[in-house]
Image (cartoon, rainbow, N blue to C red; front, side, top):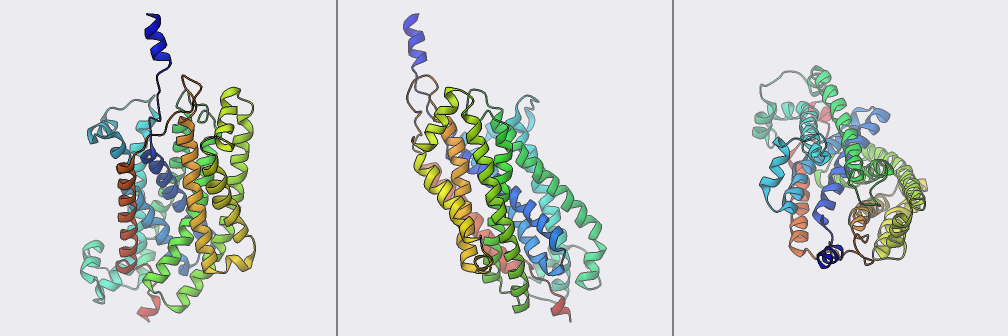
Length: 384
């Protein structure tokens, strides 16, 4: 009997939830943060020529969330296990909440995107522009009037879905932190600060995403010269918000690491894991230097925020840093010793990593195709 107990005590657990779940958490928070930032910016600018960027902040997160559950299903290995979260409801199992949060976010993003694109689709379908057949199919019954008149006609519906989608985005970020912190036995996760980590990282990566893919939209979609100038001014303003979001994220992580010093040996083990342990290079180089310090320095002065190349590089670096932040927290939190004095082992999952890269590539292709097909740009000048 004693031998059996000893065998169980020294079993090597390993990392139970791998990189696909980390991808799920990252893209979930990225989509929610992007949508929130796009609406915060719209409330600040409240200009018609900002609308193309608002479309980026609504439709692209819709695409991301439409694919994000695939990471979860692939990691489970059996789709039927993921489907049980739909009907096997348990109020004490917060993991099951995610299905409904993602579903409601997808629906609200879809409706909001539809009403954002509707005026331009109706006018272009009526004028026989390229892809007019697709626009007629999506717009439904033809409407009369200019794009502004159609937009005013549906203003109430568009604002309703805008408010609903923002509310669901905030709930989504809170849910991520709440879900991870509810796992018992993981010292790195048992902290209310995780909610603020996901909120701050969502806003940071969301602002970076909006800057990055708005500039890509202008390069691929070829808007008018005046549109590029106006949107460039807005993106420069977003870069200022991006700078302060990086600062907030740094403060939140500092508070998280500080409170770990007061939770005993487990907290000290987390700090050692990040500062000098197996995750130290990912923490110091990718998360801290590339993901926080470098973009903050690049966006600190107005001259840097006005340069598209620097904005692009800073946004790319911050998104990479946010990803490594979630990986360090999620994967690193599982590497703490559970039944021995050795770090838990991260299994090699090349097949799943290739699968994740393929899904990301598909999402990027959809982004680029949407820039060529959907009417992101305002068309008042075309009507005139």
